[in-house]
Image 1 (cartoon, rainbow, N blue to C red):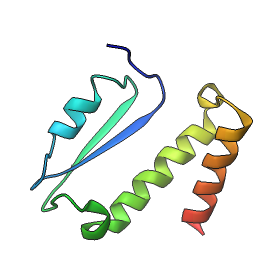
Image 2: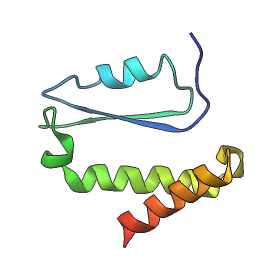
Image 3: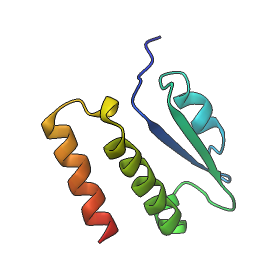
Amino acid sequence: MRQDYLPVVALGGEKGLGDKVGNMVSMVAQDLEAHTLAGCGHFMTEERPQFVIDQILKLSARVLGDPSHRRSRYEYGSINALHHNISS
């Protein structure tokens, strides 16, 4: 199976799939950060919105700060815009 070298954050709710999310994503992603959210089910964005936002911001800051992750001007612009819009 092909693995991707882009950074990936996998989030699983403890009451949902939990750490299985990280296990499944690890099959296709080498640069993986996995989290299991305690007390959370399937709807993490509703149950723990700030944690999800923080993970998106951390990931986008990491991608923006590492030139090896920049694939194209379009992708860089999209990530930069996302990071700016969420952190504002």
